[in-house]
Image 1 (cartoon, helix red, strand yellow):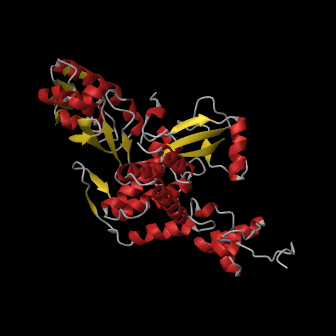
Image 2: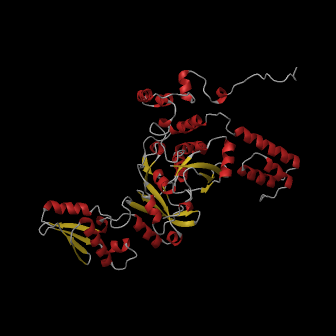
Image 3: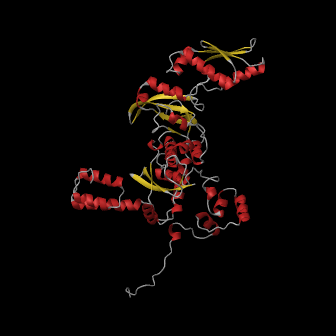
Length: 398
Length: 75
């Protein structure tokens, strides 16, 4: 049964066709509006089916080559080396060709890691609540909390904390002195020194009076993360129109996908990041595949090259995730793991491949394209794979 | 730990029975090892999946409504 108001024979006709679900639905909704006669309906459905069969990939079509060209040509029009702020928030994101290269190379760490953090229910609606999450994500270091000064005469480092900042960054604690106590104990455990804390002032010094130790302490102090996630240096909060209506969305500079998913208030079903390896580690290979398609498509779209068919990008993502892990396109990934010696040698570092193959006594079965071009045989693609033979069979045709 | 299957990037993974598996292999005319792979440690895998199992993955496809693919659990 369909949800569309069409005659029963139309439905039988459409359901019997080879069309995919989405096209069938489109046929229904169009026929519903036009109300054609049964003969017209049949004609329309047949025409659509014929057109659909026509647009499918032919058997033995070299889809990989077509994809490579379809992504490569627009790639020549991309900006070679621009860094600028992407549409969202004031966060610097690598774009254009460098980003595309980084994706197909499957770099372990993108140049500019970032996350888009969606929030749950009341956290997404209430600015105060959203800020609570922000301070749990953004790393807080000592220089953001107050002033650090050194007293060389007494060999002491003196930290005077700013009350307003403490209250802002620890919204759930009402007493700033309580926060100062936690900060003091963090300093003690991280630096291994005794601290003297009075109100909002924390003082400590090296065990033995030493000018160098004193400076080293100040240096180490500025690296301690008192709250939030170390790798995330900045969080931008924005009110945005999404599928759930208006809500707060966080954009982060730096990423730590696994940790963020566990933070209270973070919507673990919509939050994403631009590091495909982090997605792979936390959500699995299928999610990584989706992420590769999304990221490559977005990169192309931002450059105004959105007429690249998504099927090409899907093919790239399929190949990259085929082995259950993320493999890069290129010598260290897909192209380097081809079965054929000649195909590998034709790609990059020819001599090494030939030498290794000779040492190991490898055999090339000449199944692929490259190796057959090299030896001058027809390739097994398109008409090259089809043999025609005369039928020696019946005499019925005289 | 976060429930991975709830994330919008993660499609449904279900274990495939032996009977269904044979049908699939027959339809594509391939061996089990020709299927794409998925690591046994993959976070999205059902808990009871072991090496040699085949999972059925139902994706929301960009080009058709849903696309069904299969992956062999390895290593």
